[in-house]
Amino acid sequence: MATPTLHYHPLSSCSQKVLIALDVLGVEVDRQLLNLGDPAERAAHLERWPIGKMPVLVDEGRPLPETSIIIEHLQRHHAASGRVLIPADPDAALDVRLWDRLFDFYVMTPMQALTADLLRPEGERDATGIARARQGLSTAYALIDHRLSDGRPWVCGAAFSMADCAAAPALFYAVTYVPLAPQQLHLAAYFERLLAHPSVALTIEQAKPWFRFYPGRAGLSRRFHDPAGH
Ligand SMILES: N[C@@H](CCC(=O)N[C@@H](CS)C(=O)NCC(=O)O)C(=O)O
Image 1 (cartoon, rainbow, N blue to C red):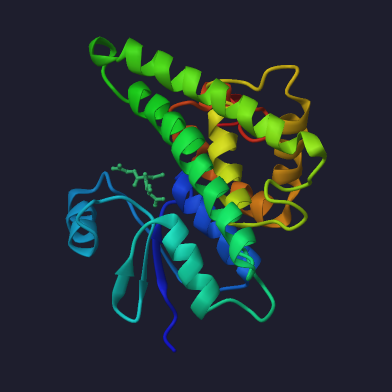
Image 2 (cartoon, rainbow, N blue to C red):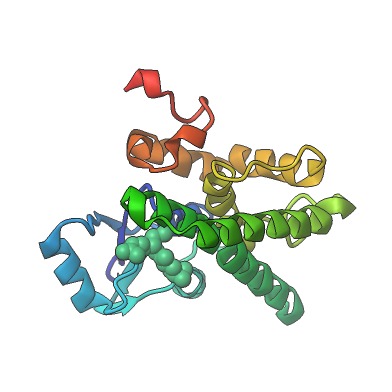
């Protein structure tokens, strides 16, 4: 079986979600760093996946987009023995897919909207869109904090799952725009657990050289990015 190729960027939250999963599942891929700002690379990527988003996994010549689909594919076809991010029990798996979607739609997506807004010229900023995205993050934080209030270590229970892979990069960047509220102690503790997870810590470490290009870097904690250091 040929080694799959992952087209990705270390700074991209969606790529990080898959990088964390690769490490947990014990899967080796050929990593192809993708610069969508380069017209030739963008054109080649659009051939691969006309929507143009990353990451994309190419396995046996077949391009697979969408992080959750990539992770499920990796678990099914490439994971090391005994490594799982989506449990075998159908109801438990549904819960993981639900929380994976909740993080993608209600944390990752508004966070990306806030990043996109920073990349616009001053006169083209979208104040209504920013307010909506910030409110969306606050609502999601409250939901997640409540979910974790029963003391569960990971968002779907005792085992680190695909939902936690989605949570880590989404929250990592989201808090640079909307910090956690002081009373959100369950979420704050979960965020620290995520950062301490070896696969998350490795992925963040590999992204560090790129943080100086992150539009929201002013909100990054000094433990990840020291502007004076660059
Ligand atoms: N739902 C998609 C989202 C992918 C996505 O938004 N990727 C971003 C990076 S985090 C991207 O490719 N942005 C570049 C662009 O939109 O041009 C997934 O889960 O894979």
